[in-house]
Amino acid sequence: MSDPDPKQKLDELSARIDAAKSAKEGGKRHQEEHYSQAQMGWRMVTELVAGLMIGFAIGYGLDTVFGTMPIMMVIFILLGLVAGIRVMLRTAEEIQDKKQAADAAGTEKGPEDGN
Image (cartoon, rainbow, N blue to C red; front, side, top):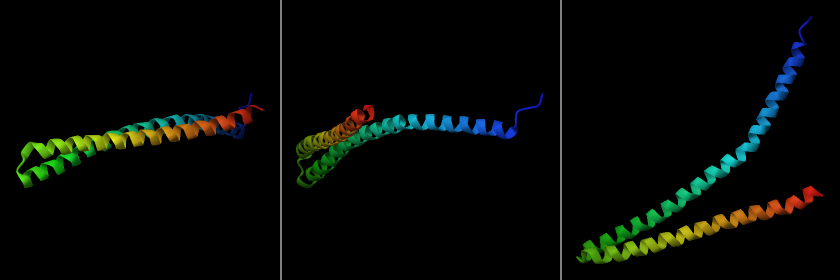
């Protein structure tokens, strides 16, 4: 009744660790994709807020120079909103193009792997 060889136990443990690491790396792609999408969402929000802030600053500055307090501020806030929305739409289009390119690359590889 002797114990199994310690080298054999160590090799088995090493194989199990390698298997666990490879399984964990497969899930890493999903986490990276999730963070990437969250970053894109924050990027879009930041672009909208930046457009509003820049429009407010320009409008307020012009109102103080010309003495027409709410007029320029309202106009430039609206222009900043429009600019922020345009930049957000451009970012959304960029995300969609990347997604379509990734899907196209995935579908091109799919039928070849199946044959």
